Amino acid sequence: MKHKRLQLISFILLILSALTELSESQGWVTYQNPDFVFGLSLGFILVSLSFNIKVIRAMGIPEKDLKQSRRLAFITAVYAFLVFALELF
Image (cartoon, rainbow, N blue to C red):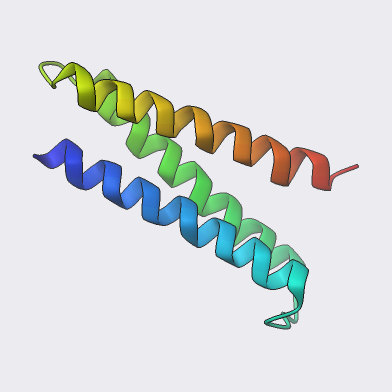
């Protein structure tokens, strides 16, 4: 059951990153330092990915949970590319 909790935390961190980026782009919250927001959002994504990788590398977990973690890791990686890589251009 520990892997279920890690998957939930990973998903919550992904949502927090999305809300952080959305609040900045929509002007809901005005930040003094936009680099701080970038770093905070990137930190959420990196921790989310690390939790998913930890679940994927674990031995003896059900195949369904393994596939779910792979899917969530892929979604997180695509989100990170779209938000952070394209922001640099």
